[in-house]
Amino acid sequence: MSRGLPIHAPGDIIETTPPFAAEASQIDRTNPRPDPRHAGARLEIDLGAIRANFRDLQRRTGGRCAAVVKADAYGLGARAVAPALAAEGARQFFVAHLDEALALRPRLPAEAGIAVLNGLPPGAEADCAAAGVLPVLNSLAQLDAWTRLARAGGAPLPAILQVDSGMSRMGLPERDVAALAADPARLDGVALRLVMSHLACAERQNHPMNRAQLERFEAARRRLPPAPASLANSSGVFLGPAYHFDLARPGAALYGVAPVAGAANPMRPVLRLLGRILQIRDIPAGALVGYGATWTAPRPSRIATVAVGYADGYLRSLSGQAVAHAGAAAAPLVGVVSMDTATFDVTDAPEAAEGGFLELLGPRHGVDDLAREAGTIGYEILTALGARYARAYVDGQTEGTGA
Image 1 (spheres, rainbow, N blue to C red):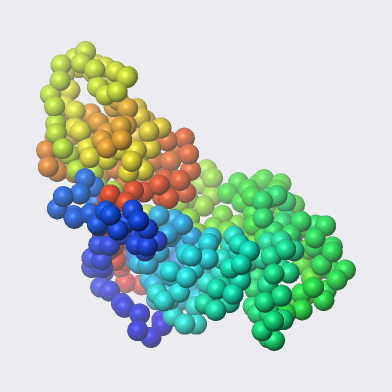
Image 2 (cartoon, one colour; image 1 turned 180 degrees about the vertical axis):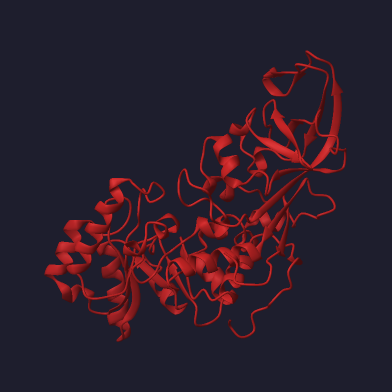
């Protein structure tokens, strides 16, 4: 573990702060952090579970594991998550944008690397180099801008080169790899730290795209100068050692999202979202609930209005689909999710009480369950988590290696 990084006892509440990326925003300056006593919901983020998931992925890759903390650690708060992962031994981090890297740099050990997956906008090269951040060069134009800066400074600059192995999104296509192979001097000035690509269908282990991308990636590497390689994302880790190369780049699996479609989730759950019950109404059979009058009570019912809505990332597509819990009792979402509230049928949930909470996410009903109900993926559920939640970072891990 790195010197000076804090170690917390199991069950400790570590902090109740909003994500780091929001701190610099106008929204955050005009809306102070939610007071847990007043907030409509509480979001508990288990750093111990995230650390255990990292250990699991490290074991599966033979210790060759980075941590993807882009999009504010997938919505969970990079300023708390990244140092916890660094304490667990992570030494390479990936973000999407340079500003994310600059905000994260002072929160990580000096020896930890930070790479910018989206590359650099024109003119940002000097800022990136000054901060000691690694750009992922996704085009010949980005490569040329980086080498110009290196030559002007008289010393090579480290970088990662991405090749497109079939996703047609970012990275050098085959024709540009060929151009680079024909003119290797174009790489003069680059200290090539890694050659990478990205898998498109890894969550479906039998998809033919996985093997095709592996073969294209290996072919591209043969045309480039020798360098360490990276291909596997979260799901790619579970495709086996042929995909691991020198560094895997898991993201969503760290945060509890199932990495393999249709299979049991091996990752530990990370989140618990508790929505405050504002009011409970007793309504007769035949009464209508919510916007559009889409739900009719089939019997005398108890309806709990909870202070979570689509403005908090509790998606409108969950209307009539999601399930919450009061203790062990299920409470189905009825009616339409509105901006600030959602309504649940707690007729069969005697523990539900005004001023109390319903568990909207937790061990009984996880991120992937909510994603299925919303017709989306766990990634969107995580990154949509709202700024109005009172966030509590806890360390609920037990002793041992976990995983």
